[in-house]
Length: 345
Image (cartoon, one colour):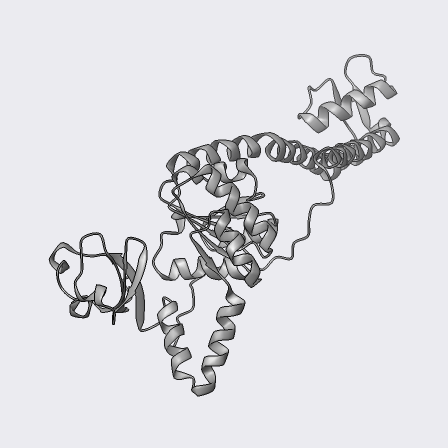
C-alpha cells in the first residue's frame, strides 16, 4: 500500500539552541557593542586629531574629538569640525561610516526585538484569536502530536483550523513550518487554552507524552469548555479510566493498540494492512461516522448506499451490524461506515 508523503514547505535546515541570555542581558550586550564601536571611532579620531580642523576656534581638544565622533557616528556631521588630511578622510570613510551603519542596525534591531515585534505579535495574536472558530487544538507536538497534525492535513483539514500548543520552542517552530497555527505555552494552564480559543474549538486532541500531564490538560480543557470533544492519548492502561473520568470523550492507548496489531499479525499481515488502510487518510478506504439520513430511516444498516455499515450508535450505545437494533435505522442514529477513499477528504 503506497502512502503519499505529506507535502512540507521548502526551507533551510538550521541548527538551533535555546537562548542563553535574558532580555536585559541581551540589551546589555548590545549597549556594550555600541560603546566598543564608538570607542574605536573615538580612539582613531584622537590619535589622528591633527587631521581634523575646527572651523570655530582652530583648536582640537578631547571634548571636540568626543563631540565630532558622536556627531559623525549618529549623523553626517554639521561641518564645524571636518577631516582635512587624506588619512583622516580615509578613516572616516573606511571605519566611521561602517561603525555608523552597525550602530544604527543595532538600535533598529533592538527596537524591533523588544518593542515593535512584541507589539506586532500581540496585535496579530488578538486578530487570530478573534477569527478562530470551530478549530482543532492539538496539545503536544512530539511524535504523537506531529503524526496527528500530519493525518489531519492529509484528511484535508484546513491548516488554519489547527492550533498546536507546546512548551518547546523548536517543536513550536516545527509546527509552524507545517503551516498550522502554533502557540508556545503550557496547555495545562487556563490562559494558554484561552489564548488558543478553547471556548470556540470543535475538538481538543491531547498527546502530552505523560499521563499525569494529559489528565491535567483534560481537566483544564473540560473546565473551560463543557461541550468540546476531547480525545487523549495515554501510555498506561490503568490511567485510561482516570483520564476518561477527568473529562475525555475518547481515550487512546497506542501501546495496547500496537500490541493488538502485533498479535493479529501472527495469522498474516493482510488484516493489519487493512486496519492501517482504514485508520489513515492515505489508504484505499476510510471509516467515518455520520448522522443517519432522512431517506435511510426505517432501512437496515446493511442497505446503506454510501458505504458498508458496520455499527450504529443509538442513545449513546453501540450496536453491531449483526444485532437486531441495526435491522431498522431510527432518527438520531449515528452510522459508522466504511467508504472508498476517493482523495476528496
